[in-house]
Image 1 (tube, rainbow, N blue to C red):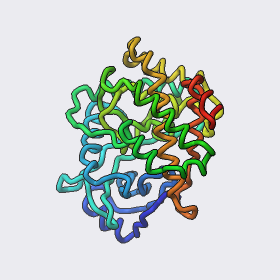
Image 2: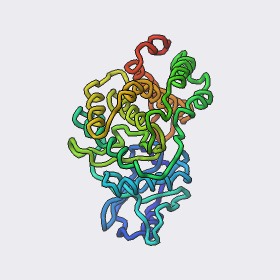
Image 3: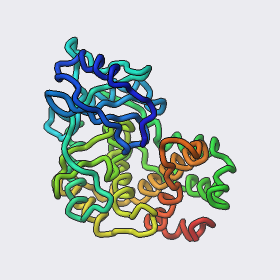
Image 4: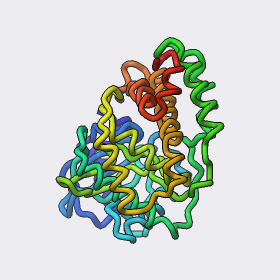
Length: 322
């Protein structure tokens, strides 16, 4: 179970007393998610999510995340805003951690989305990008392209323990991406930056909720779509490419927004960038997470393998993908 911080029933009861949400009935740790500690909380007045923010989420970033959620909720998007206590305060402290009580959204996350469901997710992402056109918040992407070379250097030659030659292959691929990255040429806005299927709650073929905005930042909107495409259109191992799912995601986005010819040309390099970003972050966790940790480490190569689809020529020149 990915719950890092234990909250006693007594502490939770005292915490809920700050709100007008009724009395505690039950609380259960949520296994999904690897960044924070999450509890499903039932009270006499309803159901909520309690999130305690662990070290990867900086307390100073929380006002940005919560302002973005409030903005999107006001625009009618299915996102879970934080609930304010009786004094109008959203960000609290519990068990020595920043904490928020968050509205509960119904729905299930998918492990094998269909093209129809992917199309709905694409439309939802386009709606998000439209909704933030007048959002005034700004946050640099802490996991954007500027962070990848330093992260590669911090991982160092230990990457070769994951796959022989992985360090040099990642460095070569990053050389290419850094040279071709479009930067602001195709438009920036507030992006989700982590729209995996487990961050979309589905009600059948309808999107019931968009959750986990803790990588949200200002970056290329098309990069947001590239991340989602890489996340949705492959199986968990990265071996099987579900082209129909990826095509439906892009079609749904284009139906709900717009894609220019310039963006179409830029998409493959942005998708390669997404492969590098998640390979590196997963590799860092793989190398630095104790084997007895509560969270299950994710295979870094599952994202690295996706690069074969986005740039077959580059992949053929890399030892770990050829």
